[in-house]
Image 1 (cartoon, rainbow, N blue to C red):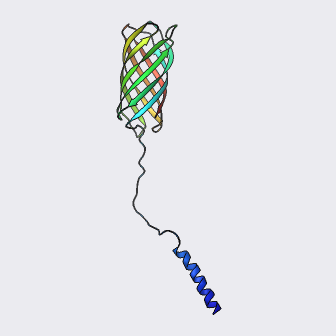
Image 2: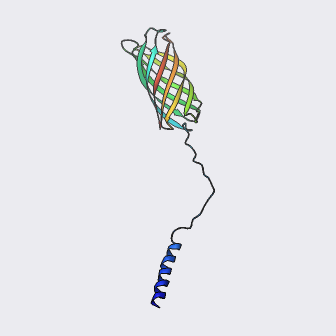
Image 3: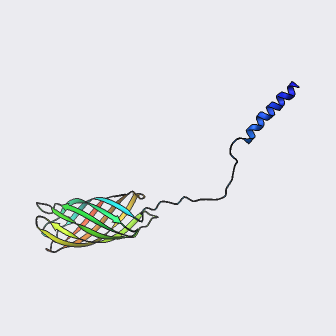
Length: 175
């Protein structure tokens, strides 16, 4: 009888392990991971850049400089920006500041966005004059929707005939 009781007890203990845990459910449903787009619908961007100004068409001369810009994209394709730039075109330096309207075409598969813009603002070296400009560039997002590098070219027409061409290279932080 003792052997029968020990055998029955061992069978009960081993059987309880068969009922432990969650039931296994298999699913043939595949849910793909949706990649994060490189360029969002609404973005706030901070640009920090270096610049080279070709002053052969104006009285200032060539010069190296840099600046900062703040851009806001209210759709995936269109945005506005405010910018400031200074370069060493003369003794006092030449200050450019203003705003711009930007149109871009994001290519998320390559994290690239070519863009074009029109700008308006002012230029000052002690004497201030109004400016208008146009240009284009290319941005590459290094970290999908957070950090990019860009290069752009522009031409600026000044009301006092101090027209210039400028090239900018910089870093773009997206918020």
